Image 1 (spheres, helix red, strand yellow):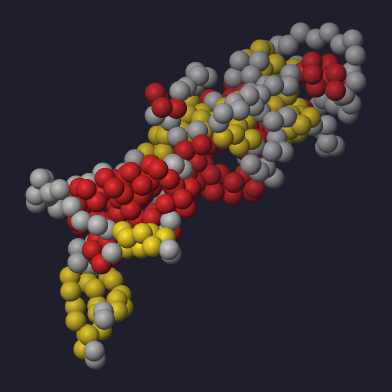
Image 2 (cartoon, one colour):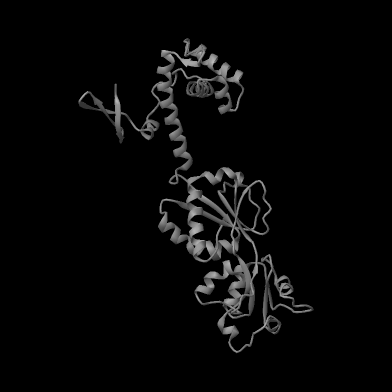
Length: 338
């Protein structure tokens, strides 16, 4: 009887009595790279093989049918088809159920190894992070203000994983546009997709220290005497925020009106006025001391504005798992989570 001790780079070691024998067996990736020697080799249906292995494992047509999610008669048909193809009996029926014949036992050992190689090769192709880009589409402001400044850190952590990033407000189709993850801004309304919403995002007034210098802004109402910059892109605008703080009957003309958060933030950094923005998007400008919250007390309003959206199969890709683990860690540093 042979006992396998280890397998390393294709070399398999066996104990033969008290002697050790070495035999070279090419690893799966090497087998894949070898040219097919005989393309006319007989090959039964893969469904036949799956049914055969399941019946051999369970010893029952009914249990095999449950595991394969087909009927018992369909399993029986697959077995009969395989036996006809082979020209030999691979099962015998007994009171204990379906029992492998001697030929069936030998065939099981051979095809199980072949299917394992196919499974390994398939998994390798699906999860090979070296072969393809991680393709991300993002809302422009999040892509520019949050993701872009951190991409070099991601590259240093995962140098073998390449990223293709596109930013727009266009509606994308995952299969057509070959996108792994779509980072969206707005209300979550995608019930058929995986949605990971960034939590703890809040909206509050920001300004540069130079603009606030010499201005006495103590109360919410004091803002109405300042230069307010409006952004059409935020889910919560000045009107919503002021109403939330019970400021009524206000009438204010905005000095600037932008349709992108990155434009509003840049205007505030330049000292043009006060913006109402997400702490997620303004965070880097605050850490760099280009912006600061107008109020020292908490006047923020909660908002769930940014979401990582993807089809369910994409969630299982190794490169997507790596990216989400990294994103979760980066967000947690700033008090956010998904």
